Image (tube, rainbow, N blue to C red):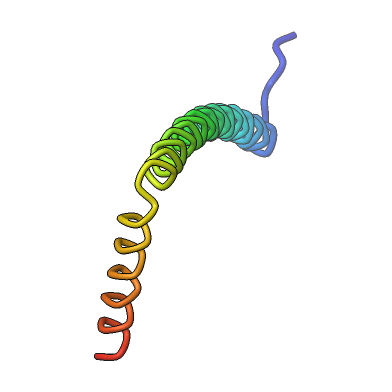
Length: 91
């Protein structure tokens, strides 16, 4: 005796299939977004390390310059302060 499938059962199956498909796509999208976020975090950490290295190197260079030529360093700092004051006063 053949089994007959009623309209409500067909609709239920179609709805369940659609929900399963949507769930799979949502999961794939979530995993893709998670992967992209992890790559971005890794790049930010790499840039942070590079910036810290650059700042350390630059601060070493500035320290050596100040130790070797203290009067010139003071003059440069004074000139920078004067320029900053002039720029801020115009506002």
